[in-house]
Image (cartoon, rainbow, N blue to C red; front, side, top):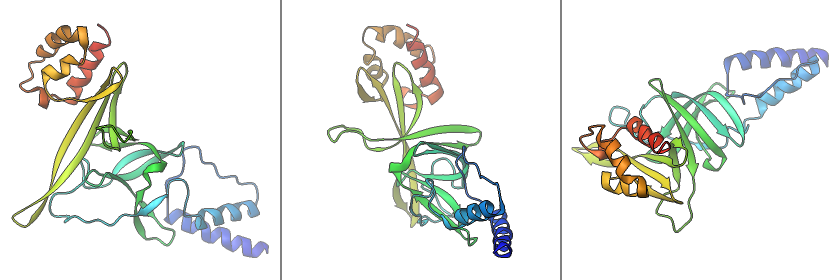
Length: 244
């Protein structure tokens, strides 16, 4: 029996070094004996579910030589996931903003790479890092009578007001080529409701008796078009509102 366990331990140790899967940040391997080591290795090898691996296989559908349906980058990016109350660091993720799906690469224990589209019901939030910029997303559901779409939203600001940004792409064809056109929709939560941010005048009206002060502050930015205001400028404006 001891010889059999030793073989299992050696075999599983080799497989574990070849095949890595994201573990929860608080995960610890109890190792107290050869039996415990073998049992734990067996569980790691045979249990493919984990809290993280909850979803279906993702099949790429776009032409890799044309435009793509992903957020910022067509290649896997570093990320952190918060799933079912647990934290998973050092993930490699893609965010498909055309289908609104979060994808991870999962290395099976047989050595094959599988793309998994994660179950949204299990995702508390996730962070994705692209070009040294980290964006945090949360899946938010709304009541059926809301004008807001159930979706992943970037949440860059959450104070007296709350800023949500929905990143999405639409699909068209031009001269036989697939095109995924990028769109962003920004919403401000204030006075108990969400409002889409569009023009300067509509935006300032949301702030009631502070609208004149805020308008003067915004004009000082010398922004050619409020519709094209940067996220950083918008965050600065919202922080300023907190002080007046």
